[in-house]
Amino acid sequence: MCLICERIEMIKKGENPYFVKELKTGYVVIGDYQHFYGYTLFLYKHHGEKTELFHLDPLERAEFLEEMTIVADAVSRAFGAEKINYELLGMGDAHLHWHLFPRVSGDLENYGNNGRGPVWWYPMEKMYSDDSRPSEQQLADMKRKLLDELEKLL
Ligand SMILES: [Zn+2]
Image (cartoon, rainbow, N blue to C red; front, side, top):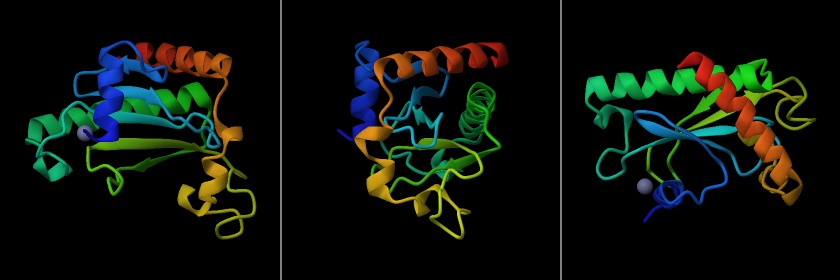
């Protein structure tokens, strides 16, 4: 079972502390590491053979993209982004999942191109350091903020 499927199983058992909300095509979860404050993922409900956007039926794809866009809007409202960065990569786990990164000036510090550029120009060891993990209280606050904004938009 892939890591995303494992996390979804945890949601179904009520054991995923990062879970925010179930939508029609996927699950909204807060990211494990929060250097980019408000980092959120939108996990597609199914895995199997459908691991590319072009594998989805047009109607399903439209719904998945529409819901992801609503999640991005809610993330932006909840956490105050200057810009949202959208990533659908899948080289770790092919399972369709969006990474939604709220971006603000200075968040790359002096890395990247004089502090500008994609999130992956920030060093992995720093991005995934224990210092970037939200506390239980911070996580609870983030989930409440995001859920509030999502419910206004849905
Ligand atoms: Zn999976």
